[in-house]
Length: 402
Image: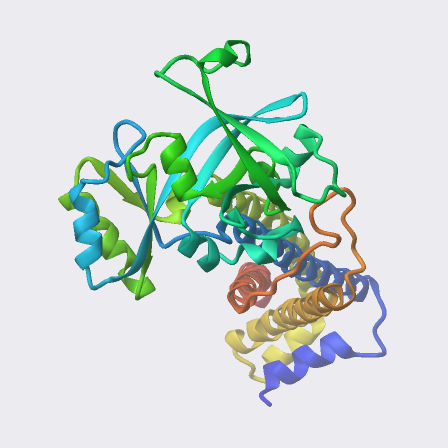
């Protein structure tokens, strides 16, 4: 241990000294500790919410979505289907139909987005895990069926204890006329068996119903076309290359990833996270000023010691290092202690779920600790500690030593 480190520790941990400087140093320590703990807790909480939201909106996500640039239909003879069938990068692809229609149960009418999906895709997406009631099936004994979102079920006033053997009437506009409840005579009708109710996320549940692709194809007159094509690749690293290739070869369709189709959701989550982090870093910077104050007061208080050390032959750099290291000790001890405390609190929340969420899809606040966040915070905390310790030692020592 060199001289500057030894003296810095003596100044910091001396039991005989209990003056105002020690009080300020203690305040500095706890300020850094609480700031560091708050940073990791808030970031982990945002990570948990972000993971939950991304899971909700991306649970059934494909690697790529191919949509028409103009209109709402990709015809069955489009060359993109031949390309998808022969591409070695693609594991499988599926046609999907999305149309707006009216649903009727008893006297209740509701507008809904109808998604027609084929059986292979339906089972690939594992809808069984999302069923709140009933069964995950697109047919009932070969009779076309329908699955309702939880919110849509509530709007249609379908009883929750229903045996799911009732009929839901599906109405769609014909002859490109304007859709209206008052113009029921313009609507084509198809009766479907209600097989079950699913719950994924509030937006999806309140507006969407699922039927078989074959049912949607016949009812909406798609002639084996699709509203969109869901593509699953063999290698996730090839997704962007495949997307660019499709967009370059077929200008009448557009390929995009799930993140690109829902970029507003992901951008909002990231923006909220970094805005909160910016505020907490500002609080951290304010806390670090107490370190600067403590070191400044310590330098003034230790004028006699500085004179003695100078007389004994200590270099200016050695004396500066004493006060710099003391500030660094306060900062690093506070930072590491705060991060450890924050991680412990996060782990306790993950284990015992003691922070509850009322009237939310989740019963508790989700937490996700990322190593990258810990490393980032260590860099930020160390940088702030370095600057707050370096400034007083560099500027004030020039006057005192001289």
